[in-house]
Amino acid sequence: MYTLYILKCSDGSLYTGITTDLARRVAEHNAGKAGAKYTRARRPVAVVYSRKFRTRSTASREEARIKTLTRAEKLELLSAKSK
Image 1 (tube, one colour):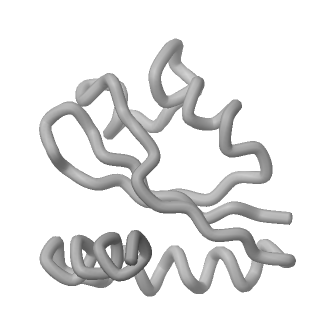
Image 2 (tube, rainbow, N blue to C red):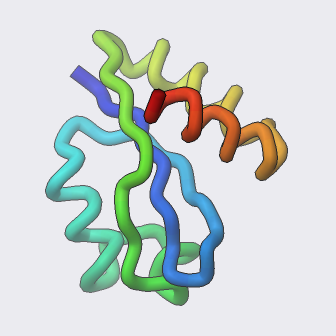
């Protein structure tokens, strides 16, 4: 299983990624050098959205789609998920 996730960074920006172990990946983003360069300067980060996929291919396609969204569209996605 692959998990697509969106993180909210300390500066309010959003970061999207995929992983097989969400807890480990969030810990990497919050400490050490294993996290993405983008999140290293914006710690701490918190998960605001996650969704599971059976294959890496489908998770990657959804990640690419979300990365093309505007910030407003991403926030709309987050608010729709919480309803």
